[in-house]
Amino acid sequence: MPVSDWTERHRPSSERQLEGNDAQRSRLREWLESWRIGRPNRPGVLLVGPPGVGKTSVVRAVAADMGWSVIELNASDDRNAAAIRRAATHGATHRSLFHDPNEPAQRTLILLDEVDHLSGGLRAVSDARVRGQLMDDDEKDALKGDSGGKAELLRLLEKTSQPVVLACNDVMRLWGSGSSWRTTRDRFSRHVITLTFDRVSNDAIRRIARRVLREEGVTFDGEALDLLVKHNPGDLRALVRDLQVLCEGFDRVLTADLVRARVESGGRDLTMGVFPGLEAVYQSRTAADAVRHASSLDKDPAEIVDWVHWNNGTVFTQATSRFRAAESLTLADRAAASRYLSTAHRSSYWSLHLSSLAASVANTEPVQKKVYTGYPAHLRRSASRTASVAEALAEACGASKAGMRAELLPILSASLNAEGNMGDHEHLDMSLNLGLTATEHVALTGLAMSRRSAKDLVRHYDEVLSDRLQAEKAPVEPVAAPDATDEPEEALPTTDAADAGQTTLF
Figure 1 (cartoon, rainbow, N blue to C red):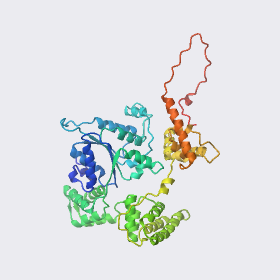
Figure 2 (figure 1 turned 30 degrees about the horizontal axis):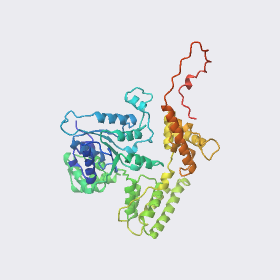
Figure 3 (figure 1 turned 30 degrees about the vertical axis):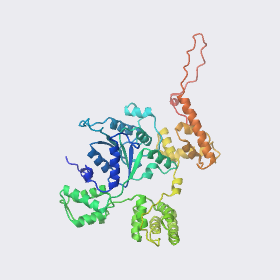
């Protein structure tokens, strides 16, 4: 039965059918070839790039040419600690029935797609709990969603005997927006090579469209292809989907009128990554182009004000340009704030437009070189440092993270606030019982990590945690049985069944 989805039907089965990103493909192939002689120093590769540029297609095609299998987990699958370990175990034991024993050892690629959507922090779940789920021992304690996934992914990279490929659209989302993002990045970077994929050229899009249409037996004209290329931002997956929508049910004839009608009806809501999108905004020389590119960014108008304000000082070299941009940004900021004062005022509309103009036509000199924009540091600092705490609370209480963040987290923060009078920020039992890190405990206290008192608290927390771990590892002395002649001891008070096994947070 033929595959109904054209994106799967026409997925490249060999590297010969791939287009674009030649240098990245060469580096990936070189890394895979190094596995033929042993485990390389970095057993993983991280593919970064916008959706639809062919990251996973490249992996599958190169693996097919090498005769290797691929085990894939994507965002629609459970990617918790047990699921990732199961995939790793399968990859380590999987062998082809047709493998020639005289050839170098066959490998199985473990591919995790869209790892930037892997939720949660780096907190690991216990080995016993993971093994229990692998053996289906305890359904009540089963891991759900992405629980423990990132920590297990790091464990996989440290111990894997098979090549591991990670793919993501936004690498900053993988690292996280909290204060510990550099730590997460550094821990992954020890084990992976990062390859950044770009959108393919118009010529490559045209060649792929021709190949798909010819394989489907569709008649087409050159003008129709030109329109398709013009309105596609380099998203190959979207290109093939558009072709399927346009061709099926229209007697297998693709005309310019069909494409034009598709474009005019709205087509697709295209969203660009923030960095290439900002580059397009800065290089625009008309207000219409600037607004169009800014509208494609996955940022609300108030966030765009922040991004443009942060990067103008770097991109603009003339004081006159910076002054003109600042005037527009001031108006944009006021427009964004007025949303809360008057619902009839289209503040989002105006703040988006004014921010776009402040990053483009406010500049007296056209930006022709490549633009290197940065992530606003104040947005990193303002991001919540307690997201992972809410996750730990949700797991301990069996509730949603949103509920914990809204209801319990404020109470706990108030009880540990270093500036308040309700509790004691040096009370560590609750955080230790939840398995929080020292940094997470400090986040609950409200202390800035730059303060000496916060650093002292981190040091004290780590010392107490180390003592606890040592005590847990210490052998338990056996208790001698009482002699028959001993007087019976007084009976201890009984414990209600409802209280048995309950973990005390304080």
